[in-house]
Length: 368
Image (cartoon, rainbow, N blue to C red; front, side):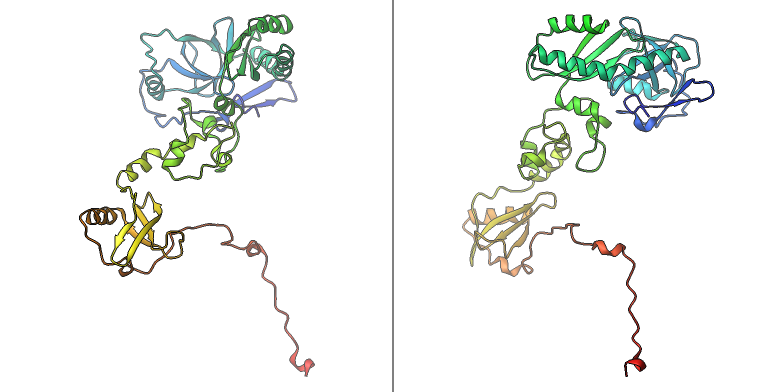
């Protein structure tokens, strides 16, 4: 199973031929074709072709052959030709072109030459087999030259005439001499492509702390800037170990609910001073942002007795205090209670899976 390219490789023991089957579940950044089966001929000749990891492009079928989803095709490249898998067809191609800002009428799309033959697939597999050793040698050469960069991945073109070296670097790197050394060492055309730490995590893939596949490997294509202010808005603990993802940067999911929290916070008043009541001062101890509930206590340094107030009521009390009016007391409210906190730890015992023990029946007569 080649998850980097989204296919399953099988070999026929009788003939020795290799067969490749498109495996949709392994396709990173795949698009669910919810418009499949709709008779729309607007984009019948345009297909999305996927290569290694997250590299995709749109091609126009100029072969005259009947190309469909999951076919391995030979496509036009800058130099030579490449081999990829068709991952999207039909009306959804038009939606994706519009989403990526590509006008098929104004931009000349590259062509699909033909479906891949057995000889093309064998040549492609020979090129893939060189990728791991090439990456190790490339890292060694870069280290010997003292360049502050890391070779993250290597992708060979389908015909084996060119290789893309994905590298990570904090600053600008002058790799002109490195390209010459690579060309002499590997005897191929070299293309250097810089990627960030988030893109590297998307290329490698993996599981996040939520138990699901990394968002960068599943669907994120444009990485937006993430700051600690997103964690502050959501009242999260500013612990770097909890806020960092697999890439060592702040998690992309911190941005998902920021707008919801900002909308809720716009309805929560700022309490800069304690609320004045007839029986004393009430201090703000906790705030449930999404429920818009604020918890106050008469003890400035304790959360033992907390009284819940809606944000709208707190706003009214602040206005009353500014006018010199003090409400009666918070104690007229329901009994103080701590904010709701639910945890699954310890709720169920591990021994619940064990078979119940049978109680031994004692022979009363024998005992007598």
